[in-house]
Structure formats: structure tokens, C-alpha cells
Image 1 (cartoon, rainbow, N blue to C red):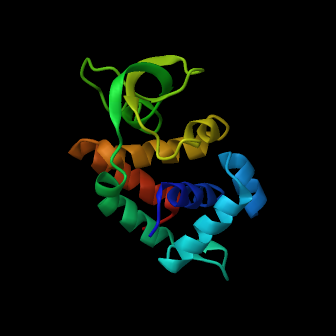
Image 2: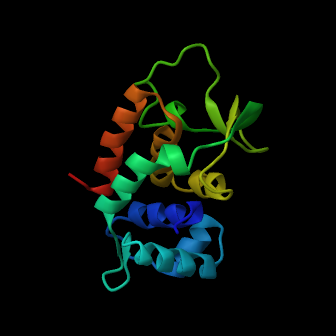
Length: 169
């Protein structure tokens, strides 16, 4: 069975594109242990989302899993008003393309955050720290958050954005 930390690792590897990477760097970037990354990649290989021999994520499989499963298996816990990092429609690539009602933006709770919004549980506890250091990865996590809890129009946009970022046609 694959979990949220496994998806976080796969998304980080995808965000690297063709750049070289190793498990130690992925662990450092995600604020997790190297053994966590190793176990995540092993579990991902077991469900055919990662090829150890090619050192590649099965982008088509990952896209399919996220599009069809995120809202069920990764449903976020929403909370009250807090300070944090914006996510979902409040972040690029959606910011400005989706005009929200007068509701507060969804935010990952973070005491160092600068935006007041409604609490939205991140994919994994270290995701906000990792996203703060990598804009492309941050956007990818926001796309996944829309798949987890977006409205139909937002989800349609997220599917397109995910395909672009994972290089899936």
C-alpha cells in the first residue's frame, strides 16, 4: 500500500525532471530521512509507480492514481481560520485564473506563514517546508491539493496542469 509520504517522494522526483538526483538529496529536500525515501521508492516500485532500474517515476500511472484517487484516499482535513502558506486555487498556476468567492484561501498551517486563511491539511507534514524552498514543487503540491478537494472546474484545470508537469500527454 502506498501512502502520502510515498506520493510526496514521487512528486519530488518528478519535479527534478531530467536533473540528476539521489536519495540523500531527495531526503534533504523533503525534510525526511534517507530511509524514508528508500522505503517510499520500494513501495512505489511494488505498485508499479517507480522503476528502480530506470530510476524513473511512472508518470502516467502517478497521474492516473492522483486524478482518480486523491479525493478519496488523500482527502484533506479542513479546519478553522489560521495563518500559513496558501495552497490550491490561491497559488500559481491557479492564482488569477480562478476567481474565488469571498471565502478565505486554503492554507497549510504554518506559524511562519504570512497568509490568513482556512486550514487545509498538507499532503505530508513536511510538505510546507519543502515547498517553501522549491517553487516548482510548491506548484505541483498545489495542483495535487486541488485534485484532493477542488471544485469540478478547478479539478479540470488541475488535471491539465498535472499532465504538463509530469510530461504526460
